[in-house]
Amino acid sequence: MQEAENVLRILEETIEAIKKEEVVQLRELSNQTIHTASTSQDPDNVAVAVIVYSLSKIVERGAFKEFPDFEKKVLHLLNEVIISVKKRNPKEIHDCLSEIRKTIESFSGKLKEYIKDVFRKASINKASKIYEHGLSIERTSSLLGITMFELASYAGERGFDEKEEKTIDVKSRIKLAMEMFEK
Amino acid sequence: MKAIIFDSGTLISLSMNGLLDELEKLKKIFDGKFLVTKDVKREVVDKPITIKRFELEALRIRKLIDDKVLEMPNSLEINENELIKQIENIKNITNSTFVGDGREIHLIDSGEASCLALSLLLNEKKIKNVG
Image 1 (tube, rainbow over the protein chains, first blue to last red):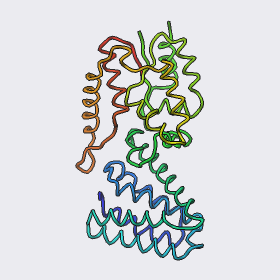
Image 2: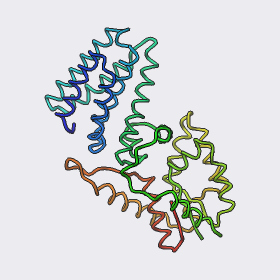
Image 3: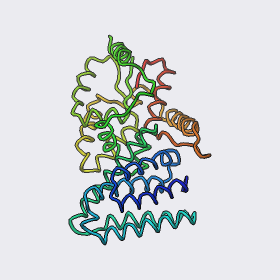
Image 4: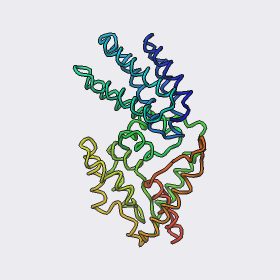
């Protein structure tokens, strides 16, 4: 795992944010993992971003209040991930992250479908953030395990801050298009 | 002869917004070819056609290929092997240009690379093109 110290801090702060039900803080923490996830393209860094974002949605819905045992289990698993990151054991980190995702996804009852949907949407949201970092749409989709249609649709609705990008202005674009269509 | 090369993102946007018909109309007034590469076709037709949610969009794009609104590079006698060679070359350069934490950052895959490669080969043939 890349930038283990940073991930460690994020996971520790995630636990605190869950306990205090700080949804905004959880979302910010999830975004803080994105830069590393974009450059390293390490699946575990990507998984941390998706899991933390999903947790923010679960907290927002009040699911942990409704199901305290579920919260207990998730916090326990997050602690397990922290221990494995501290040990710098890549296999254990990977296994722990997979376990946390499986546990959340296997939650039975009325939350099951909601949580599956949360993970899917979290993956698309994180993909759009990685896409903003300059990776191609194809590369980003494959990294997050989503389709290009899902990413394109989300990115299209959301739009990006393009202030720093240098691109052809609209006038020149139209001129070029008109030239191409001239007989 | 002129050509417009379509990448996946463009076709996906047009398809999801119900604007593929416009492409047909534009083709009628365009003195050239609308091109898609095999890699792009894989991304916008072959793969999504297997996913129920995106099957309709994929079918719409496939119809454009069947109707020859969108054509493959061989319609302009682009050699498949040369294209593959150029794609690999572009991928190698692009995906080793930026380095983060001592590792090369993988930026693009075959779809985007194939559009750039096709554009280069069309330039060699002096065929005006945009993507």
